[in-house]
Amino acid sequence: MSELKRTALFDLHVELGAKMVPFAGYEMPVQYPMGVMKEHLHTRAQAGLFDVSHMGQVIIRAKSGNADDARAALESLVPVNILGLAEMRQRYGFFTNEAGGILDDLMIANRGNHLFVVVNAACKQADLAHMQAGIGESCDVEMIEGRSLLALQGPQAEVALSRLIPAVADMRFMDVAILDYDGSEAWISRSGYTGEDGFEISLPDDAALKLARALLEMDEVAPIGLGARDSLRLEGGLCLYGHDIDETTSPVEAALTWAIQKVRRRGGEREGGFPGSERILRELEEGVSRKRVGLLPEGRAPMREGTRLFADDQGAQEIGVITSGGFGPTIKAPMAMGYVSADHAAVGTRVFGDVRGKYLPATVSAMPFTPANFKR
Amino acid sequence: MKYTEEHEWLRPEGDLVVVGITEHAAESLGDLVFVELPEPGTKVAKDDEIVVIESVKAASDILAPLDGEIVEVNEAIVEDPTLVNQDPMGEAWFFKMKLDDPSQMDDLLDEAAYKALIE
Image (tube, rainbow over all chains, first blue to last red):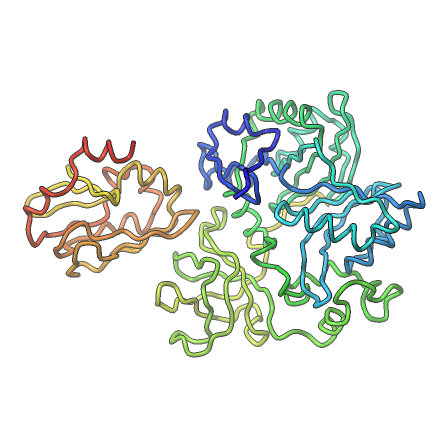
């Protein structure tokens, strides 16, 4: 196995007493001494600071110098309206493959004369190659090195960050800004992956470390590890790539159709034109045989990833599988998401999960499990 | 007090033994969210998987430390699994059992041997 990489904040994590684990090729903090449960609750109540520097930060520039060319080019890889994305705004999207599966999910920001995208750590080299192969002729696609990425999430995130960078208070959900922090360019978006209000901040490594230390000095802010990041995003109903979505799941099956704008659908002005469009556009009209849903187990036993789902409590009719599951500290109950056959996907449907040989009931439920708390 | 290599503690109480998990085990498991205990009256053999616990991270089994019969279980930790993180060596015991052969206790680890194991 190749050696694990470290982010610029590695020493800070160790100093804070983090338990470090391998994740997507990096040594990352899974939890701090506070523990997963308290870190989760702290983020929902105040503000949590996450090191997400392992993720890939990529800049796409049109070789022509015309920014429209870069936006049009990226539309050939994602079923998302990029040409219609306003300047200094950001949008969720995903790379699809020819079979209509999902190669990765990503955030796409229109920064005027170029695009800035953030992709998952485990996929970032493949994504870079995919972009270079797909749009490299018309665009320069550059993986940014030497910049860390922090996420500050929670209802007190604005209060905390605006003490250091006052202009962030003017940003709304999914706004993007380039602001000064201590003489460095801070690339900021008002977004995150916890279901809370918050910010994602890209800074040169030294400045990021300085910002992290300054934030952690504040009473509202605590460092949060990958453990709580996972329970937060699951309560928020958000997909984890490689678990809830992958190359075998289409965006329609994954219930991510909200991210495919009308203009890219059948009858739209720029219909199709992305990999797998035939399947995805057909599924949008005709429906799918399985769907990603939220599930609330009735008892206290969590239903983990891989738990098989049945229509009955005898294990006779298998109808799906759980792709993420655990305990929700905010809802104080187990929660899960997974795929079920379309005829069992309606909210309120009762299904049964095979937990150690017992068929335990769970109810198909709307997501997010906790109300989203964005500043729109 | 005796210990097993599976990070359980056993404390004699009259003709029963009280069984729980060690501080070290509770700490490395992380915050517990689910505990499933056996029915009182269950006959168990050493190393039977008789308790399921789940932390925020994963599920684990707890094995019967010795042969015997489960006499009483601690429903308080089923109601509130976080008790196990707060007081694993005291209030958050798991079950009481009657050993088939109390002399088997002698084969378990004493405190010094357990400490050596986890260091």
